[in-house]
View 1 (cartoon, one colour):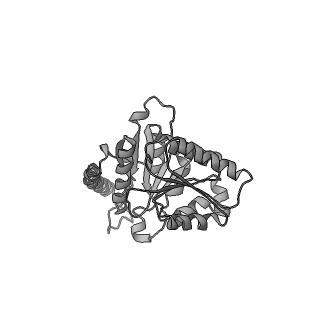
View 2 (view 1 turned 90 degrees about the vertical axis):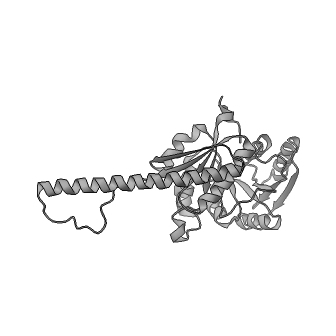
View 3 (view 1 turned 90 degrees about the horizontal axis):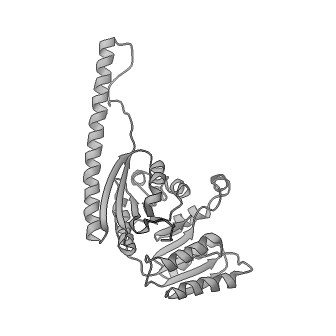
Length: 294
């Protein structure tokens, strides 16, 4: 990934966010591949939300005496502690299984960590030590809601400044990658990242300009081609007018692209709420893992 000008560049890790759903296996497989390609240690992180729950099926209403109230509070506290211990133990077994899975797939020095807290706050706190985040587009809630894009994805991407690899419902090692290139600063940094990083070394790179052409499109495309070819990449370029989402989705299908790189959420959350977000639309429509650049 791009040089962040930190002295401990080699020690910064791939951080995979996992929850207890079957999507965690795909996140782990993707993160193990990235760890191996980048030569970076892997950490599997499971964040537990601390929730105080009342004992199920008990009536706690009405006036009760002091001793009864104290007994009830003690009972509820004991129940909460027991639930917490059970959740921690379940999480420990879950993480150990994923660690073994990542080792089988060549991850470097995989470690596991479980903590209480809010996911966004936890990831922002960790990002100075992270080279690449990996998370699923869907998570545990999708097991019951069938949501096609997890509720945390946009919030996490907006909160973080490091690249985020958003994983689909399966993973195979990519053989062809594509950058959705518009000539802007964000996607130019994406080209620079590809050129410097070992993540895609040896793979052909497609550079696609989709949508309304810019006046300097040819110049920008020539720059991208030259920068990547100078880094010994095989480069395939294309400029296709039309609806951006449709053009990218069709190109991914036609050219058997295995991984997509694109800039993410260039507008404010309010603008996205009012007018929609191209990033969200592309994440919903793309069938392949997507590396999001901020």
